[in-house]
Image (cartoon, rainbow, N blue to C red; front, side):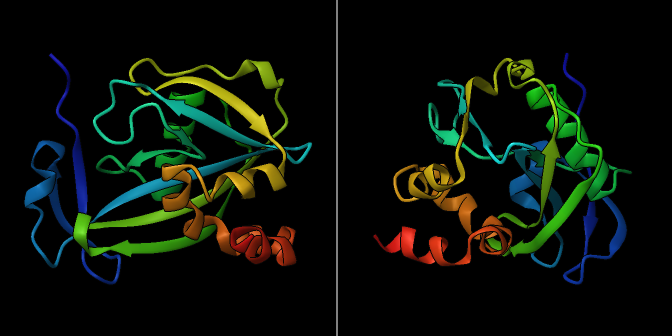
Length: 180
């Protein structure tokens, strides 16, 4: 039997409340409480971005491409620890350092999303997919990634979290590419 996933709860300012919550009751988190979700954009040192293909049996967005590894922080984990764990579980890759890109509050899901960037220097064929999560992957050039944001449902959702970072890489292209 799978172990029950327990989350720490936080107030609206992102401070731990001392309370915990079971994942199975995620839809019942009180209105003034949040849990931490981590999202890692993975970029290879050569500049390409890692996209993974979601398992076709996933409830949300089956068979869609996504640009992150991520999930909820477990009780006792910092956002950085959770991001590193999720990245390793979903891709088999580790990051020497994670850079915080932004923090977004999502009241509808009672979550605070920490978006990180991980720059890796791995063999590109060393990605290890997590059964039940992902079934494929590809490395894409930055401008290809930006173009895919217009068409891929999950990328459209993730893009606002990464836009501040992407704007620092190629500021003119992000807005132009999304318009055109």
